[in-house]
Length: 117
Image 1 (cartoon, one colour):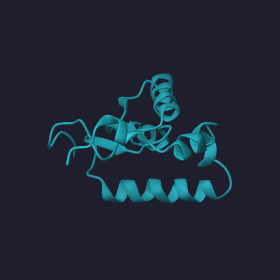
Image 2: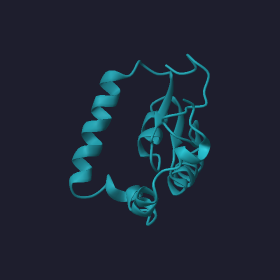
Image 3: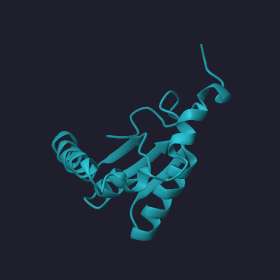
Image 4: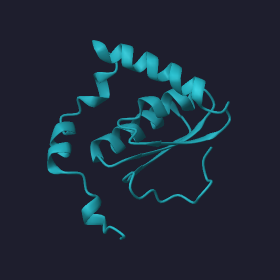
């Protein structure tokens, strides 16, 4: 069964949770620092060497997309939360990074097969 776009909208509770923008700074304080450092280590260990094209699904406000782009990756971020898409685009633009962003859902990625590494 193919879902229509309305059924792909995140639940209101999800949108409300992220509405205040908290997620943009979460990885830079408290326990978030450990999460950020470990995730960065795991990404670099698991991904093919750059240059490569990466799709960051559910990429939030763009920290990991920027982290990877700064290391030579071309990154496309997809997130269902509007404020995340906006912030990820702003972050990439300010830093001049090869990151593209779009509002989207992991259940329906609108990219051609084999378009990312």
